[in-house]
Amino acid sequence: MSHDTPLIATIVIGLTLAFILGTLAQRMRLSPIVGYLVAGIAVGPFTPGFVANQGMANELAEIGIILLMFGVGLHFSVSELLAVRTIAVPGALFQILCATALGLALALWFGWPIGAGLVFGLALSVASTVVLLRALQERHLITSQQGRIAVGWLIVEDLVMILTLVTLPTIAPLLNSSTSAISDPGALAQKLGITLVGIIMFFAVMMLVGRRVIPAILHYIAHTGSRELFRLGVLTIALGVAFGAAKLFGVSFALGAFFAGMILSESPLSQQAANESLPLRDAFAVLFFVSVGMLFNPLILVEHPASVLATVAIIIVGKAIAALAIVMAFGYPLRTALLIAVSLGQIGEFSFILANLGVALQLLPEEGRELILAGALISIMLNPLLFHLLETFGPAEVLARNAAPNEIPAPSKPTAVTKQTGHTVLVGYGRVGSIVGERLLARGEPLFVIEDREDAVAGLRERKIEAIAANAVNALRSANLGAAKRLIVAVPDCFEAGQIVEQARATNAGLRIIARAHSDAEARYLKEYGASDVVQGSRETAEAMIASLDPPPGDPDA
Image 1: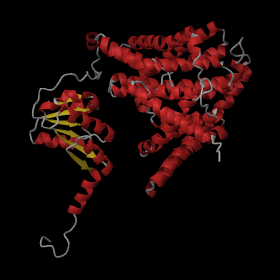
Image 2: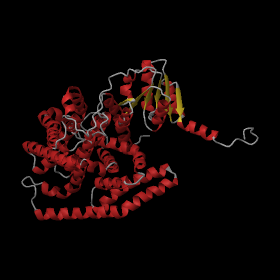
Image 3: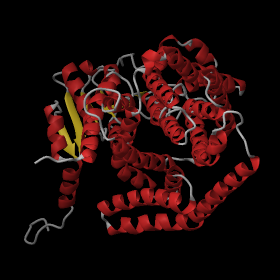
Image 4: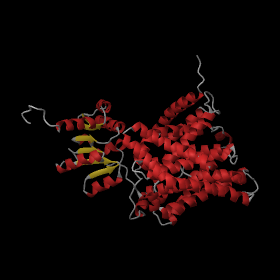
């Protein structure tokens, strides 16, 4: 019996290929997004073999867009933006204008109309949130001055793109003219007025009603104690508000989902909502990137190499020069300017959304979307290399001399090995690790700490405690494990802990290694990798509770 199941085939094959190619990209120290896009190319109509259903892939991508925008709203921080508003707002707007102008000039050189050039330039102007945050996290720069500016910059770019997605369908008929960007000012004013009224009404409803109702619903569900219902409630809010915004107020799915996330971000349950929606959000985000890859014709790399190179040059060189110039003009140090320039030298999810919308509105030619996809693939692949070149060949002395007094310097590469012997190496200084560390310090034991949070490491160094800010998987060699007394792995992630334990055991076969686990399965996993002792949180809690019980009747100790 044969089954015609295009939806299941699209999801299963798309996710399977995305997993395989995303893993390969990760192993090559590239963003997994590259693997997801290549998976889409593999199941697209321009390559041989299985061809996924494009219509269904686009429907799944729409859900991916909604959940992506919901996540952007959940993590939207007005305080972060206000903290760096003096540079992030003018800097982002200046860079967007420069990139859009360069894209428009290139489009006019191609012979495209002005409307296509504007969409093309805007798509090249906005960096990928996923790629930028990943790059900053890997280098422990999120809490640095450079990181705060880059994140604030990104928030401004996202807001501009959201505004573009809302207004573009309204003005598309007027931009379709190849002779004039505004052929009828009266019609433009009327369409924009209608759009503005819809946005204002939606904003008013969300502020007056949604701001009270949405958190109240989640609080009620949370008090039921059902994690399943809480997760379902979060997804219902994200999808329902986006759908209602489009049907009732005429605004885009993207804006509705963004507002739903932004409203929910004010609730004390926002972090839990983000955590519960993350798995499904990630899955549909992967399908979104796969669907985008399906639209890419690899032949453009062969047929129009000069156009691809010019597009990549705008993304990597043009945007970088604009960012470097504006940051330096505001008196910030060279290190900040260089890191922001490199961080923003790529494009991603918003570019794809805008390109698809431009093609759907008959503003952007298919070739334009393919150039944007090619530019995204190449820029995302080159971004880690640019960071490596900056870290390796950057003028470190000049950067250090130009550092601002309030700037948190980027962590140095953990190559120096500690000279301590008979010491305890503590990996992770969070809720658990800090308690263990303080107890060891109280006993006067020598301690070496590896922690990925800059603020925690800075506090330890102020107390003359040797510590480095790094991911222990990459920095364990600095701990001098061959001469250490013990290793305590206090990080909560079992897979990361497993890699650390495996490396440590290979370095010192006789080292005592103590790790933490959340379940029996995790405990077995860590034991298999070489942990001497594994402390399981739930089991230890249960034992402590039993020990606190009143002694049974007849007990002589009663």
